[in-house]
Length: 159
Image (cartoon, rainbow, N blue to C red):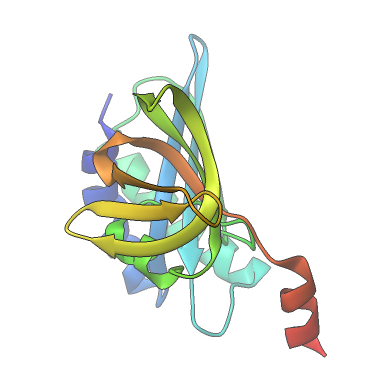
């Protein structure tokens, strides 16, 4: 079975050929089947038709390359308001916003962090946990991260 970096290298061109930005992917594997979740983005937003078009494009690549050795389900979606963060550039887009993440191993005795993202530089983020407490964590130590949306701010943008 292909690893995530091989899947990204394989699928990113197909997403971009469909006129979308490749945001990231998650691969969850159990004994019987796998779930491949691909996130796409576009400056004008992502529609159901966009997801269907990209899903068709990706399915063609997966059928030819056959990188997943078990039965799998493909999901294509926008990253949403509480979007996962995969790359340093994505973290940088949300400096000043609130994020939540889990580390691979404990850092300062804990694995779960929530706070305001203050800086991203050279593969390290600075997170303000409160008014006095800051923590610097390497992106390589982060297992999963996502934006904590400010729902009120998002709703006021829609008006």
